Amino acid sequence: MGRHVLQMGSSQAHCCCSVLHTESNVRVTLGSRPSCTHTERGQLWFDTLKRGLFLCDSMTWVPLLEGKERLDYVEDYQDLYTNSKSFDIEVFQIPSEGLFAATADWESKPGSGIYKWVEGKFEPFQNISTFQAQAWKYFTVGNKMFLAVANSRAKDQEEKELSVIYKWSSSRRKFLPYQTLETHSARDWEAFSINGEAFLAVANHRQGEHNHNINSVIYKWNPGTKLFEVNQTIETSGAYDWEFFNIGPYHFLVVANTFNGFSTHINSIIYIWLGGMFQPFQAISTFGATDWEMFQIGDRIFLAVANGQKFYEKVPSLYAINSTIYELNMTTKTFLRFQDIVTYSAVDWEFFTIGDEKFLVVANSFDGTSHSLNSVIYRWQGYEGFVPIHRLPTTGCIDWEFFTSTEGSYLMYSSATQPLSKVFKLKTY
Image 1 (cartoon, rainbow, N blue to C red):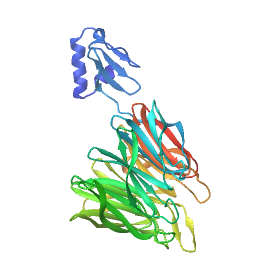
Image 2 (cartoon, helix red, strand yellow):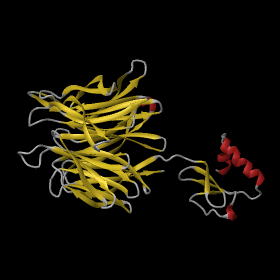
Image 3 (cartoon, rainbow, N blue to C red):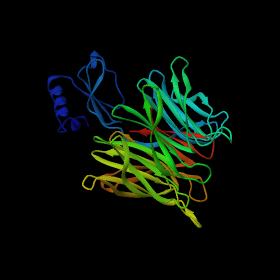
C-alpha cells in the first residue's frame, strides 16, 4: 500500500521518495492518526479513511497527498422545534459571537426565533415579534450588522404593512429595531453591494388580496442619514424572490415572478446594472417561480429556477412540473436551458460544495395531495448534468440552508406545515 502510493507521479510523491532515500528507518503507518513527535520525525502516515499521505515534522502531520472530502450519506442530526411553522431559515455568522440561525415564523406571538449554535446544536437565543414572516436576510454595511425580516401582513388590519431591519447591538448582545419600511405582502429581501455602495431589494408579492402586479423596491444605503432610501422601483407580478450575482464586471438581479392575477405562466426577468439602475436583460418563461439560485462550476455559470405550479383560470393546478437549470452562453450572451428536473411545487434550490463535488438540493413542498414528500440532493456529474443521489423525507419543506461549523457540514430545512425544522449532518469519507 505504502509503496504503491509513493510511486505516484507527482512532484509531492517524488518529495516523499527523497525522504525514503535519506532516512534509514522510514516506515509508513496506515489507519487512524498516530502521534507526531520528535521520535516520529520524517515518518509517513497514510490516512486510509481520507486517502491522504502525511509527513511528520516533529510537531504536526504535513499533507503531501491529501484526499478531498466526499459525501457518503446524510444523517438525521437535530430536531429544532420552532415557535410556529416557518417559511425561511437564514444561517449567518457574527464575528466573535458565533453561528446563528433565524427562522421566519408564521405566528406573531412569540414571533420568530433566533438560535445560536452551542456545542454542536442550535439553542434558542432571541425572539422577535414578526407578522406572518416570510424571510430573513443577514447583511453588513461597513462594521454594522443587520437582519431584515419580510413581514407579509400588518400588525393590525387598519395599519400599513411594515418590514423591519434590525441591527446587532454588541453591548446588549441582541438584535434591536433599526428601520421600518412599508412593504406589500413581502416575500424576500436581497442585500448586495455595487461599487462599494449597499443596496436592499424587497420582493413585494401583492397589494391587498388580489393585486399582484405591483412595484418591488430597491433601496440604497445613504451614508449621511445612515438609512436605506428608495433608489428604484421595478414592476413585478407576485414577486417571490430576488437573486443578485456578478459576472465579471457586470451586476445582475433576477426576480422570480409567481402570478399575474390570471396565470402562473409568466416571464421572470433578469436585470443588468447600467447607468446607475437595473434594466431588463433577459426574460425567461417560468411557472409560478419561487426561487432563483445562481452558481458557478469552473468557468461555467448557471441559474436554477424553482417552478411552483402550473395554474390557469378554470384549469386544475399542476404541481409535478419541471424546474429548470439555465447556463450562460458566452456566444449569445444569454442564459439557455441546460437541464430540466421534475419537481413537486418546488420552492427553493440550494447549491453547495463538499471537497471537489458540487450539489443541488431542492425543496419539494406539495404534489397536489400531500406535503410529505422526498426532497432530493443532486450531484454534478459533468456531461450528465445533475443526477439524484439522496432522497430525504421532508414535510412541508420550503427552504434549505447549507452551513459548516467546526463539527462538520450540515443541511437544514424549514417546514411550512409544522413547527419543526430539521438539521441533517453530511457524513463524509
